[in-house]
Each structure stands twice: as C-alpha cells, then as structure tokens.
Image (cartoon, rainbow, N blue to C red; front, side, top):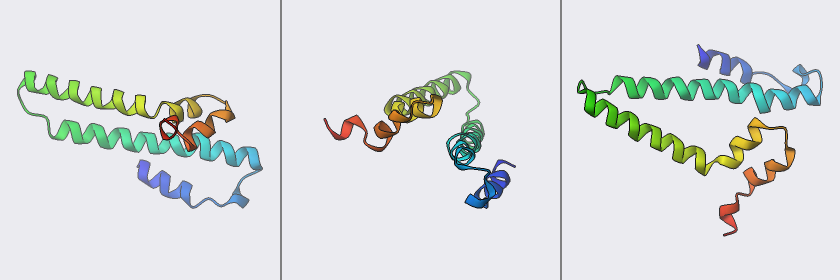
Length: 102
C-alpha cells in the first residue's frame, strides 16, 4: 500500500504544486514520511519473519537491532535534525557532514 502511494507521489510534476512553498513542503515532509513508513514496515517484517522460537535469543536479536538503529541515528543526526526542525542552515550539515572535515 505504501509503495503504491510512493509511486503515485513520484508521478507529480512541479506544475502540480500551487507554489514553491508547497513543493518544498512536499519534498521535505510528505515524501520522507512515506519512505519512512516503507522502511519501517519492511524492517519489522524482516525481523519478525526471521525470529527464532527461543525467548532469550529473540531478546538478544531485538537488542542487537535496537543498537543498530541507535548507531544509524547517531551517525545521521544532522539529517534527522534538519528534517525535524525548520532550520534551513542545517541543510549544509547534511550535504557536507562534519566527519568530512575531521
């Protein structure tokens, strides 16, 4: 279902927007929301479809997945902050991460 909406959203052209602000909102908020949902549900399916029966092994697997997610967010914090705030200056941190200059 999410993939269907994403394909429909991809078919939109710049002339379909009422203005530049509407187009920016679309690419900054709406598209990432649907991609986030798609990534989330695919990942949940992958985890749940490969879970072993043992509760202790399942708990270890969940902890491992949680740590991987935490590392991902920590390494992409600049992009996360940009999408969660209205601070346009953060886009430079997304395009040119600090780790490139260290």
